[in-house]
Image (cartoon, rainbow, N blue to C red):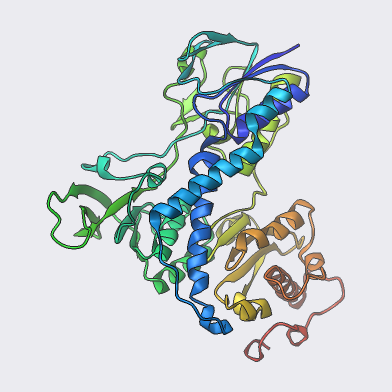
Amino acid sequence: MSEVVVLGGGPAGVTAALRARELGASVALVERGRLGGTCTNDGCVPTRALAKAARLVRDAEQFGLYGLSGSVPQVDFAGVLGAARRVVEEVHAKKSLARRLREAGVRVVDEAGAVAFASPETVSLESGGELGADRFIVCAGGHARRLGFPGAEYALTHSDVWDMETLPKKVAVVGAAATGCQLASVFAAFGSGVTLLDLAPRLLPGEDEAVSRAVTESFARRGIGVRTGLDGIDKIEKIEKPEKGDARFVVSYTLGEEKRTLSVGAVVLSVGWPGNVDSLGLELAGVATERGYVVVDDTLKTSVPHIYAAGDITGRMMLVQSATQEGRLAAEGAVLGDGRPWRHEIVPHGGFTDPEYASVGLTEAAARRITDCVVASVPYSDLDRGVIDGYREGVCKLVVERGTRRILGAHIVGEQAVEVVQLVATAMRGVMRVDQLADLELAYPTFTAVVGLAARAATRQLDANGSVSNGRNRPEAAEWELGRDRL
């Protein structure tokens, strides 16, 4: 019987431990703190709870449009954070991870403190003792990066938000990728004046340009300041005796060689997520690392044949759904000795900003670099559901390979975007042609129907340009949901 030790109790580690046990291995899972990982304890779960509270505030702004009376709710920030913590506990109770693992026969060592390799075959525990095994799976996650500019110690990370006592009147969020944008959106909904700062040339630089543009425009309408293309953050200075408002810090930055300052009540850093490699003693095990992550091949094997790694610590695709998949594959490789190669190609993801955004597959720019393709974009304002619910802001964009009619990517901004994109991901996984997607009879009135509109628009382009057709032309006038200005 194989002996497997899993380091880390987040989604990758728990999945790896359960799968390894399912395959017949003797398994021990070691977690330095609380089971559940970053996502459950201070990441996705509580952040989504904040987004829910922010959404309730925004929904109240529509009361008058639907014949309702009532004022916009006042934000009790301490109460909101308390609700987020309550949700975390409810999710923990629902999952019952320790019980599930032990019932499956996994030995669980949680609250173990620091864990590190003492040799390629053993790990030592701060709480005492050592564990040996013939296979290891490292799922130790990552942490928020802190920058080295003067005064960086005054800044918060997303993990510190839960300990804030009051809602700042003004917030600077440094880093305009997924986490930064979500926090900016939430703070703005609660009433803070928010400025996003980033060295990248645009907000959400890893997403399709259509997503970046739509979210940027929406943020501007909501009063969120966006400062991209910075030359750098120079320093943060603490104001010892604030004279007006709640300004406690001055952020100094350079934009186009111009020195600028911003006075705020709080600074939140969201500037990257390196793996937790420094304290694991990986050098004693001979495990190679690069740029803050454990190096693995497509079977998730490290530079040491009997040690695998999965989840954020690999830096491959730092999402819960991807960590779960990697944990399963790493366990199969470790126990069966015949790892299955895997690349993260179809991974729907998104952010709970206002409006939401979501993507799957290739961006338009990436697709055009490798093949001839057509692009169809449909605004949410074309949806009857957008009119009904008062959420006309957004767009659905499909990227389709011309010759095969395969869907290469989808990029959505708008209401329920993170839910809507799942349909396209499923179609891509099933190698469905865009004209087949166009023929789906999607329920009415729904936001998901925007995918059908975009698929039919793409099919019309393909038919008009003489690519392989199924023999049926789809004239624009046949669309039920489009307005007169679109016919």
